[in-house]
Image (tube, rainbow, N blue to C red; front, side, top):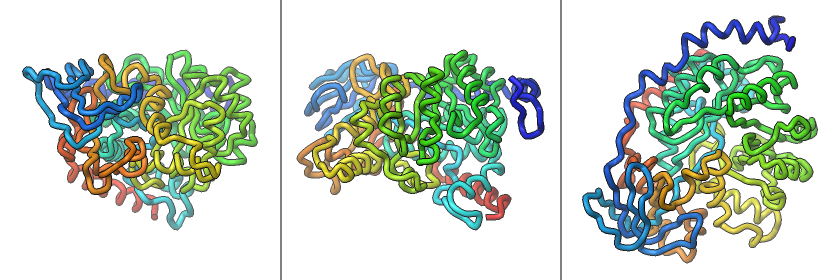
Length: 465
């Protein structure tokens, strides 16, 4: 390949020159992380008013026994034995939420969607070069704390400001120490040229071993819509050679959709279950059919798609096309908060309002997108997203007796249209408690807030905004 970068160097030279620095930064996260907290020998979740498994009808007054991070048994009046017992009367027990696309690196810039530089894109362009590895790490810390607080137990960290191997290592390290399940999607620097690839050498190095039992590696690529053909094709080829899942923004706006990127991917066999497409806000029905036929999952983020000006996500068409959908909070710069309950509500209400058909979409459909379908779209459907013996114990308990949730005639409606993050009392990830009695138990929130505030103040000063 002879594609030049902005300095006129061939692609092979760029990759070779990165090799030495990548070797020096390799796997820093693998040697410095403390051991993961061991789950209790057994944990009994006692007497939930409702159990929502996502594969069976809701059950009433049900217990769940957890052993070594797995669900061991589900049923009424399970014997406690030597288990740690948590009383869940007044709660619904359900799988933790799965967020399928989240730019965590800029979380400290919450609400900074415009500045003297302009709107979202110019403002991000101004601040992104000033994020150090320590800055992206604290943003990821903040994002993961908010994820847990709101009941999100699996994340897809879409790291599209990887400015150096150290930046990637810092984000991975933050994910490992959090104990939150997720995928780190290795990306590119925000200001990289369309004719420059991501650091494929460092990617290849870290892909040789999984960071932890909870964190895996994928890539987030610019794809046909945002990079030159030799670049995205090289990135696809490397990812597939390494066995890594791929994610890319596609057809976000009419101009992107008209460029024919989805057809280009299809022509090169660049779609499939290992290739997640994000947004598709302006995709034609023909393109949706191509995506569905190839089996590529899709992630939508209705709040940010509205807020950034992409338009209204065509959810009714996506349903009709039979796409495998997952939900996303996207980023805190635009969305402001990591609230999967509100994402589910907006998804259902947009589908009904735009179609002028209140019965077009069931509330349970949105719950599936936020749990079992989201897990399947990330290749985790055999581990999480549903509650059954043998599944990993990624579980949340939501109050059904709170002022804003009681009484409720319908459980799916309660969860998609009434419940809020503050109703999440218990969060387990791999059987480990991260939130109990409504309080986060594994993070130092004052320290995270102070570091995040200092980080964004420094970055704004450096960017003169």
